[in-house]
Image (cartoon, rainbow, N blue to C red):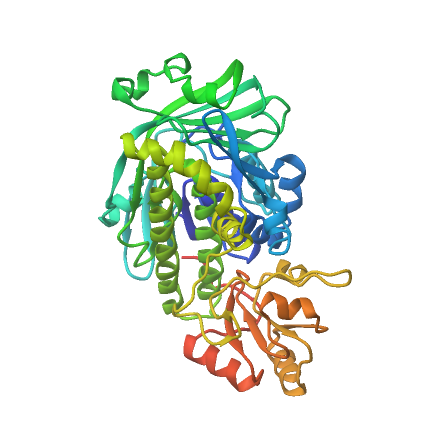
Length: 516
C-alpha cells in the first residue's frame, strides 16, 4: 500500500506550492491529478506582490520576475479616454520590494513549480483520480484510480483537497459551498493586437456594461483580454466564439485585434466553503473559494492557503506542535476568503451593473471622481495594498498576540530597506525567527540561542519608525513570515508563554514520524 504523510489532490498552482513547501520541510507527499498533463493555456496571469514576497522562501521569485512581465501601472478608461492612472511604483515603492503587478501565465507557472518539485524527488502522478476517502481519526484511507484504470488504496496522515471548483474532497466532506453565480458570462482571449492599450500596462474599460480588461503578456503586441458577455449571447456560453463577443469595449480601449490565439468562455461563481478543515482533510484554492477573476486574486489566494497550511502540517507531523495548530488554518484563511469575495463582488458589480443610474455613475461621475480620489496618496496606497494582498492580516486570531505602535500580532511585517540592510532578506528562512530593531538584550540573545531560534538584530533607522516599527521591541515571526507576537519588553518569558499557550515547540525541524 502506497503511504505518505500528506496526500494532495490536484496539481494546479495551489497543490504544487503545498507539495513544494511541505517537501522542503521534510514531509513525505504524494500529489495526484486526473489530467493527462499540466495546463497548456495561460488561464490565471497575475502574481501579486505578496506572493512574490512569500516565494523568496523557496527561491522562486527571481525566476518569475525574469521570465514574466511586470506591469507598472493600471489605467481606467471611460468613453474612449484614459481618465485615471495608478502607477504602482509611485504608490508601492516604499511598501514592498515588488511594487508592480507581475504577469506570469499559469501554464508557465505550473511548469516552474513542477521543475522545482522534481529537484526534491517528487513528481505529479497524472491520470490518477480520487474516487473516495475515509477519515479514520488517526489516518486517511483513500481509493484511487490510476492511468491503467486499476484501483488502489493508499493511506496518509492528512489529505489536501486542491481539486478545484468541483472538488470531490469538498463533496465527500459534505461541506456547503454557499454563494451565487454572476449573471454575466466571462470570456478570456489571448490575442495579438495593436493600439494604445498594448503598451505593457493594464487597462480597464468602465464605460460599456460589457466589462473589459486588457492584461499585457511578456511578448510585445500580445495581450490577455478578460471581458463579459450579456444578453441572449450568454445563454449558451459553450457555443460562443470570439466573433460573437461585443466589440464596443474593444473599440473604447482602441484595441485592434489581429489574431486570436486562444479563446474560452465560462460562468463565474462567488462562493466560500462553510469549512476549510474537517478532521484530517483540508480544502484549499478553488475547492474552498471562488470569485471574479477581474482582480487577479484567485490563484494568489490559493497559493496563500498552501503556504499557510504547509508549515502547520510540517510542525504537527514533526512533533513540534499539537493538532490544535491545524484549527488555525480554517480560521485564518476563511476570514480572508470571505473578505476577498465580498470585495471583488462589489468592485465587479460596480463595473458591470445595468441600468441608467449605473451607466451615469460610470460615464459621468467616475471620470470626475476617480482622478481626484487617486490624487490622494492614502487612496492610492489603499488600492495598492488591497490588490497586492500585502494588507492581508490575521489580527485577533488564535496565533496572533500583542502589539507595539501600529504593528499587531497577525500583521505582515513592514518592509524596510536602505543602502545597508533589507529586513526581508531574512524571510527566506523557513522557520520561527525573532526580529529586533535597535538592540537586543542579553537575556533575549541567550534564550534564542538556547532554543535554536534565529535572532535578527537591525541597527535602528529613522525608516523603521516611519514603517511603524518600535525601537527595541520584539517581533516573533512565524515560518510563513507573518508576525505572531509583538512585545515592547523583549523579555524571553513573553516568548516562553506564547509557545506554551500555543502548544508549539520553536525548535528547528529535526525528524518526522514514520508515514502510516
